[in-house]
Structure formats: C-alpha cells, structure tokens
Length: 311
Image (cartoon, rainbow, N blue to C red; front, side, top):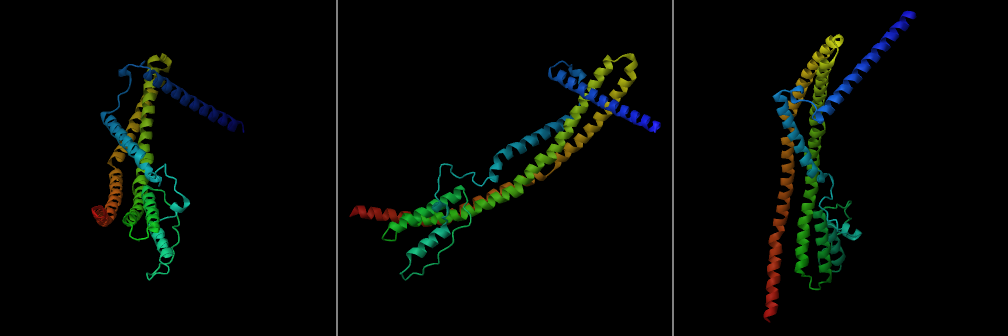
C-alpha cells in the first residue's frame, strides 16, 4: 500500500509538472505574440515559414473570401420572399387568387344560364407563396376578373390582356420556386459545406502552425536568457519546438493543397448558373408566348380608338 501511495504521488507530481510546463509554454507564446504585435521583436527573430506555405495561405484566403462574398448574396435564395414587395399588403382574397383558381371560379359563377359549358368551381391553392412572380400573377388575375365583371360587352381588351399576362406569370412563379429549390440543394448547401468544413479544417491547421511558430520563437528567447544550468533543457525545448513546427507546417500544406485542388466549388457554380438559366429561359418562353397576343389586343384597341375619334 505504501508503494502504491508513493507511485500515486509521483504520478500526481508528474502531471502537475506537465501542466505547469504547458502553462509556461502557453504564457511564453502569448508574451511572444504580444511583443510581435507591438513591434518589439526584430524581424530576424521571427521564424520564417516556407514560401510554399505562405503562397498557399494567400490562395486559401482568397478562396475563403470568395465563398463568403458569394454566400452573402446568394443566401437570399433561402428565403422565399426575397423579391416580394415589402410595401404590398395583399388581402386574404388576393392571396388566395391564382390564375387557374381565379379565372375558373369566375367562369363557373358567370357562365350559368348560358350556352357555354361552365367549369366546376376549383379549390383554392393549398399554400400562398410570397414572391414577386406570384404577386404579379395574383394582381393581374384579380384585375382581369374585376374588369371583365363590370364590362357589359364582355370584350374588355385590357382584361383579356391581363388574363394572358397572369397566365404567363403563373408559369414563371412555378419556375421561380423550382429555381430556388435547385439553388438551395445543389449550390448553397455544398458551397456552405466547403466553407464550414474543408476550408475551416485548413484554417485550423494554419492556426496550429502559428501557435507552434510562436512557441518556437518563445523557446528561442528563453534559450537566450536562460542560466547555464538550464541551457541543455532550453536547447532541447527549442529542438522539440522546431520538430513540432515542421510537422504542423507539413500537415497544413497538405490540407491547404487538398482544399485548393477540390473541384467542388466550380461544380457548385455550374449548378447555380444552370438553375438560373432554366428560370430565365422559362420566364422568357412564358412572356414571349403571350406578348404577341397582347400586342394584337393593343393594336385592335388603338384601331378602335382612332376609328371612334374619326366619327
């Protein structure tokens, strides 16, 4: 039992000694960092890191800033209403309006008693999306219905034009939701993963290099100032710190190269471009599909106006 107690005491003493040593190294490194920040250390007393390491640092920093800058803007795609007009206060009736639902129910209510087949009333859309395309579609649909209701001739050209316009925006609003979903899945998620995981791992490896470099330079300063009795121990600490810095620098170089060689960012960018292209192509197709008809209505209305003025 007595031997066991001595062994425990020895282990406790060793642990205390190790903790004290770590604390002293940490303290010396902090002092070294402060002195460097204040310009109290000569440049030749700061250990120079390999040029390859410094070049990789600059490239990783540029890659990191690129991810942050693009992410700062593209994060809007995580919020559906990024382009919804803030000043718009749509009523519950307007929010429940869509081209299919609104026009179908208008026809169902107004074609009764005529020879035209009346469609069955449609159910309102299950969810209301607050985007600019949806808002434009709802406003055009509501206006088209209102104009047709009060026009006894049933030939309100502006109402017809707005119905065509709202139909185009109904298609565009669907494409807009698909675009946002694709961007979130195929661009934003992997782009954020690269930033928070791959690049962050490299950044932590660089922090370890900096801590090791400060520890080495602090050990060198201690060696300069130490007493003859502590010379050998101080020299060993410098050697150990040098080995540690070499090892950590090699690890950081490997990790930084891995991040820079990763093709994921350019693949992610391609997905962003594809999603946006599909949306704008769908928007162009939908609008070009109705523009000719709206123009015909416009020309007809202008002709009727001039004709009425001539009489």
